[in-house]
Structures are given as structure tokens and as C-alpha cells.
Length: 375
Ligand SMILES: Nc1ncnc2c1ncn2[C@@H]1O[C@H](COP(=O)(O)OP(=O)(O)OP(=O)(O)O)[C@@H](O)[C@H]1O
Ligand SMILES: [Mg+2]
Image (cartoon, rainbow, N blue to C red; front, side, top):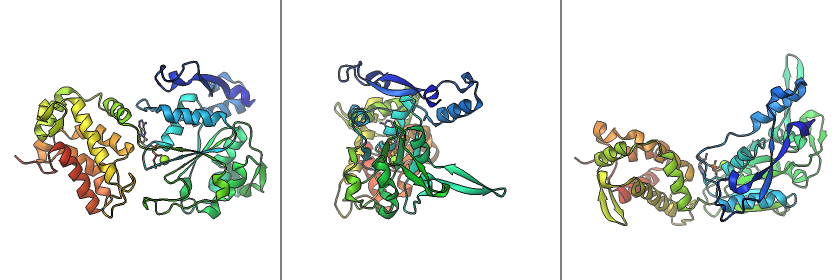
């Protein structure tokens, strides 16, 4: 029955993920699914399962920039043995979304679990509640993934206390596991069940000291992992992302805003001011700010005592670039910089005072203006 719902389909890697066909042979394919429209089934049970699994396929992020190196690693892992995949790296670098978008593009239903300090086994395997005097069992994401033969992602895996993570040991071995809240029913993982973990650390150490609740994990776990480091994307990738994010912002608005702010940006063509700054130069300046901040942050590897506890992740950069032009009237209305105000909303308000000063200083160094604009 399930094979009529989870209909396998081969996808070209290059085409599906928008990769350069000169770098990735378009004939290389990977397997995903095409789940038929539930209304095409006559059996109500099949309709229900198809609707459930279709809804579990994540939505495609049209602005997502797939990275060739990460796609090749995931592709390699998907064809190599049964080890779990560990995607690890700094905050907001694209670990969770790399897997989510892999599933979205390949029509794969996504089951996910979030690790945290007080994590309990039932969050993965399922729980039993009393409803109107009857006990009702709800299977957890791990159980569902194992039963359907689909992958499961456990995010923030390093936040789970190692003693609580022991439940996963059998599972990484591909062995059947019990569901305590369902009379210890044994779940036999079906072919296709795979485990993906994400973490900020490599599960061994946290040299940044930034992830206070991260724990070191047992060597037996480390022996069952295929690990991929996900750092911040290359400049070209983030540049393409910002270009897309700003595609709806007109040149006239940008010119007006740059003038109002009085930006002064150093470019390969010399120092440019206000409306003379091009869109491309502005985007490069945003990237310069991001790189300056990353270099000063604990996450970016700075070990100085003054290292920043927050950073400019791809997540924040995307939001900053997207929302800053909407603050184009701030100079005129409040005498304040829209670029700085937006950074406050998405990043610096939620930083220590010293970090906040350093974040705005990075903007001022690159754009030549502070929060309060001078007449
Ligand atoms: N390659 C990319 N293309 C487009 N957007 C991206 C890309 N990578 C990251 N982003 C943006 O950054 C956001 C955060 O990414 P994601 O959730 O994958 O980060 P993470 O590495 O899992 O972070 P955390 O350590 O906080 O869990 C995404 O929702 C998306 O908006
Ligand atoms: Mg994540």
C-alpha cells in the first residue's frame, strides 16, 4: 500500500538544486518521491496517509541557494551505508535548511525532533494521553519515520544530555527500538529510515564556549556518524541570495535612501557617496559588514576576550538585507539610519551592550554613518 503512496522518482541533482551543469553532470540522479494527489485514491485509509505524508513534505524556499559541496556530501551519504549524517557548524549557517530543502526538492516527507536540555524520550518515540477517559497513543516523529521507512532529523542534537540520548544508540545501529509509552511496542525500522543530526558543535568540544548547553557525546555515537561541516556560505552564494532578496526593491527607492542616509562606501571604483552607490556596491558593503562581524565573533573562531557572543549569521543577513530598505524613510522621519535601525531589530537589541556597540561600529566603518544621522 505504502509503495503506491511513496512513489519513487529519480531527480537530476544539477537540475533539481540549480547547480552548474559544468560542475555537476546533469545525468547524476538521486531518488526522492512523488506522492499522488490523495483524491486519486478510493480507499479512505490511503487517502488519509497520502494527505498526511504530502503535508509532511516541506515547502520549497524559492530563494534558497543550494551549495554544491553540501549537496554532494548529502548525496554521497544517502548512497553510502547506514551511518547517521551530522551537519555541524555555527549558528544560522544553513544546517537545518540544507536538509529541509533537500527533502522539499525531492518530495521527501520530513520528520523532525528538536533537542534541548530537558529532552525526554517520548518527544521522539511518542506519548499516551488520557482523552475522555480513554488512553490515546500518538506516535512520535522517530517512530513514524522508522515505520514509514523515511528519514528523521534531530536538530540541536548536542543540547540533549548524553544520558537522555542513549535511547538513540540502538537506532543509529538500525536495530528495532521500543516505544515505552505504548507498552514497549517494538518498532522495526523499515528500509529508507535514516537519521540526520544537526549541531553547533562537533559533539566533542565547543572551542567557542558559545553553546553553553552543548554536551560532549559518547565515542560509540561518534563511530556511527558521517559528519559534514556547514560553515557560512561563500561570498558569491550570499551575494546571489541578497540580490534575490532585494529583487523587489526599485532602483529609485535605493537611490533616494542611500542619499538620505548619506552612505559613504569604499568601492573598487573609489569612494562613492549616496545615490552614486550602485546596488551591487551596496550588497558588497553588506557582505563586508557580515565578514567583519564574523571575524570578531566567538562563532567565527575569535578567541579574544572581547569576542562577540552574537554574529551575523546567514539567517540574520538575509533578514537584514530584506527589511532594511523598508526603513528608507527613517532618515527623513527620525534623523536615524534605517540600516542601523533594522540591525537593531534583528540582531543588536538581543546582544550584550559591548557586542551591540561593536556590531554598529562594523556598520559605521563600512557605510560611514552611525545610528543618528548628522544634518
Ligand atoms: N543557502 C541558503 N540560501 C538561502 N537562505 C539561507 C541559506 N542558508 C541559510 N539561509 C537562511 O538562514 C535561515 C537559517 O538557516 P538554518 O535554519 O538552516 O540554520 P542552522 O544552521 O540550522 O542554524 P541553527 O544553528 O540556529 O540551528 C534559513 O531559514 C534561511 O532563511
Ligand atoms: Mg538548525
